[in-house]
Length: 191
Image 1: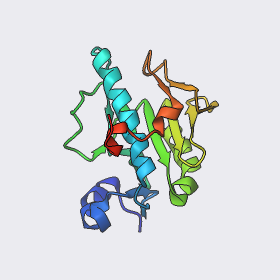
Image 2 (image 1 turned 180 degrees about the vertical axis):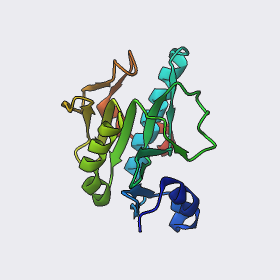
Image 3 (image 1 turned 90 degrees about the vertical axis):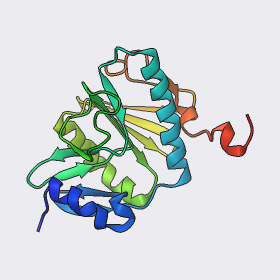
């Protein structure tokens, strides 16, 4: 029997690893493989760039949220937990104390780091766009590129020296795609 988003939020603490790598898809709990090191590296590098961008643009109306449960569909409910979601009209820590939100992000970033994530990504992108998300970035760790799908369904691929931009949502934001996949120097103990 399908469960609701709210039931999922209550039950997730009883799941393996406190439900950290789970999502709700059409009322069914889906367990995902834990992310690998490169997954974490990509999220860390993007997070750093977004934080710098936010500091340079204090008037930006919205915030990047991490591990935020987004209710993307109702009856049956789906809750996705993207690597990053840029949610408009919220302060930097406004949603930090709540797992679920029905606020629709302008941008959702997914990282494809395992086969289970790869198998779900097409349907997730479709559901994000149906829910009103303006742009979905899919960071592919195997190909080391980024697929950007916008609200119209238009797709763009970025790789290597290309600069990832999102001028309608984050005016002026730029990040070389290759930087997503670079291990920070301090991880290796050098500066």
